[in-house]
Image (cartoon, rainbow over all chains, first blue to last red; front, side, top):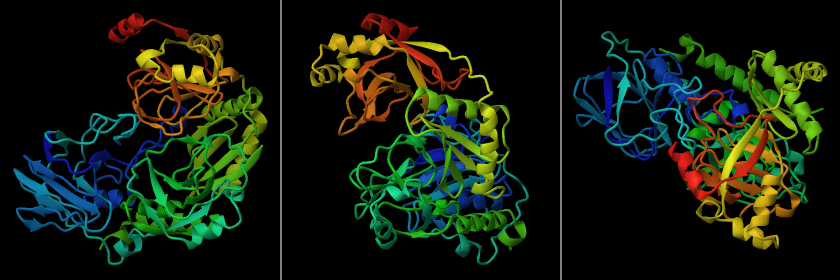
Length: 313
Length: 224
């Protein structure tokens, strides 16, 4: 088995795929890549299956040695990847010769970068997914973030790699944005009259205390009306819940599956990958769209991602 | 039954507006029917006290179609026999280092610590649903005499196996996680194991009892 050796892990590097959706009854949230669009494109550029496990790096990447060589593709944020002192372009396959190392630095734009490998990262599945669930220490590589010295099995070096390239305009169309489109949350009516205007008209800053479970936002308080008593219920991915102190939290991929805070809004499916690329201190805005618009955007997104003709040059 | 769009790809189905056995039984019956006759566009079901959150494939259906299908299922759900509840016994070493909040709970409710334990073990609890973390079962209803709100400042880390109380609920933390419930004891059992079937020691609808054990018994079980 070929391997990838972690010489330095970076800030938080985990194995992720599309996650394990469907186990809410066990209290298990889906986990999975924070930017599923980047993971998908990175894998497709290598002609892997779209959801093949890859390494998700956060804010600062690591140094990885490939003793047996590999074909890789970097997707997502620009972490200044280099090999032998030469910059490696994002969004295209690169052959790594045996014994070479990939050196990543701090991000220059977005929060996460995916290191996809032809043939994938070989870890055991838990409930049908290779994704790491950090809170419970399940899935991925020993249920934890990677550390110096870890050696992960990877797919075999493919001799003939096609130099697949993304079509012009694809990256622009999918570029993560700082304005998140939302639909109304199930407790929208519980909020005081000015809350929707506050949500739509204000800037919020992503707090340092944000992670794969949720992003805490700093900004104007979103006051709930009166003291209606909420019964804990299931929480959708991307829910914007509001704590009693008026702070908004976006629930994310490793979210708790149920919660008792009212939810004023929910990030639409087509913008969830943007949430995964937000860095602490990023300023964001919300824009309300209808359920019908959100659905149309999602369907168009799935069509684009499912079409080789539209994605690749 | 009431429906509410929760996101562009999720619908909340409310089977009642309160926490109680009758409403929860409707939740479980509908869940069982959806498990028995799975619908291909349902991606996830999250049950809770009085609701089910249905995440669906929005390329296949919209909220109206999901609502119609769930309505049809609900009319048949009452004929589903409620699954026979398992009785799960959880041994707990109360107080001391394992239950750092036991004395405080007793003091706040004007009780002796022994009385708090007595009230905690006196009831058979109903597992309403699993949430928060894998295998974390929300158990109710806790005796009113020992009910207290969550800690103002949650702990950054709660040891795996910790038994907590919050409001009229009690639960066992399956993993070392942050947590805001008041800790009164700890079980040596592993609440969630991926190499076990079922993985969770407690499942939705199960009956749960707590049994006090000594520190020596706790350590012996841990080692076994």
